[in-house]
Length: 316
Image 1 (tube, one colour):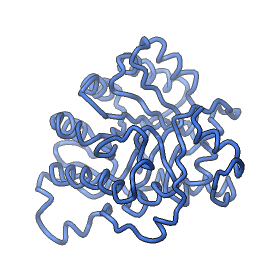
Image 2 (cartoon, rainbow, N blue to C red):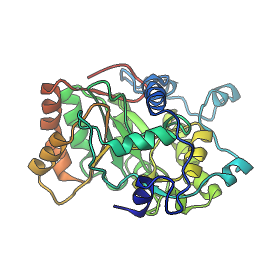
Image 3 (cartoon, rainbow, N blue to C red):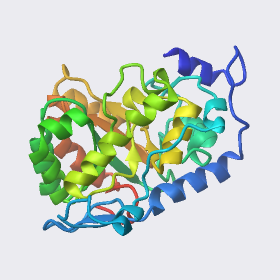
Image 4 (tube, one colour):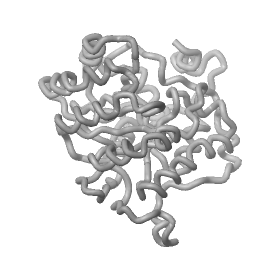
């Protein structure tokens, strides 16, 4: 387990600076409501729409001041409260095996309690409902994105794709297909720093997020409202920066990116760890993920689960 997660598990010990903890039930309820209730965004390029902000058209985004003012995401100045925020780095990627009777990983409840409401961040959805949020990290070559999109279309399921600048630059046709198929597009950062956003200065963090947001808005007239921290590494300061820019930070309660495993191995792991309110982070470079996806969707449905995307009350 990473040092950040060890620090997180030993609350208020070993020099860890942790925020005052609100009532867990109230914090979880508020965070769940925010996750499910953000205003939906649609795409008008022949699709039924995706989750996000404002009706989309094919008109370039450089047109009018009125249109620009409607945007919810914007660059920010680095203020004193940002500089004073705790920059201790935590690692979502550390798997926490302690689970409740519904198979929900309790470690992620801790994250939700401490940062879910106060920093507009999600590691879990509504754990009172059998809902799974499918998300994919598009951080490199095309890999299996086309196959994943075909599987999702056949199953009638929507998902969220977190893209980096390289992916947007190199795969414009896939970005367009993601939007046309009615999926949600999320900001995965410009450079995807290995040590995460907390390894950058506050000014550098803004520069690692906003140019990608602007680029996608200019090319597709689509405003991404969800940010995924590279490698799941975050700090209170980094969460504050994303929040002030207008983003909801979306992490995960399950992650599978193994590029060496077989589809059957991936499917077994996915099935064993399914839980209410699950936010799944899946890697598009993994043949195992692509190969297991259709069977997993069928399994989830058989177990009484539905799929959802952020900011929408639609279930698939």
